[in-house]
Length: 100
Image (cartoon, rainbow, N blue to C red):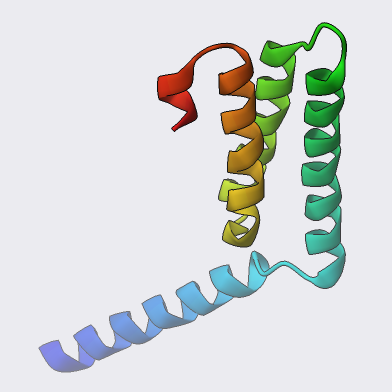
């Protein structure tokens, strides 16, 4: 009987996991919305960095926000682009160690 109980509980856990995964699957509209948010933060980062004089702290804040959103949503394909802007901001602030 213990094996029946164990298999029933593992089956229930499997169903719960499937339901959870389906609830939090992103559709195309969600992904598009997230990409737009990331793009807005990157654009703001570029604007702050290109001002005269550059506003590095604000630019870094925007790049970090884009990175946080990308990480939270599992969008690892955009990491290198965001990391470039983060490093660029650190270099602009003279923080060479953090830039690498």
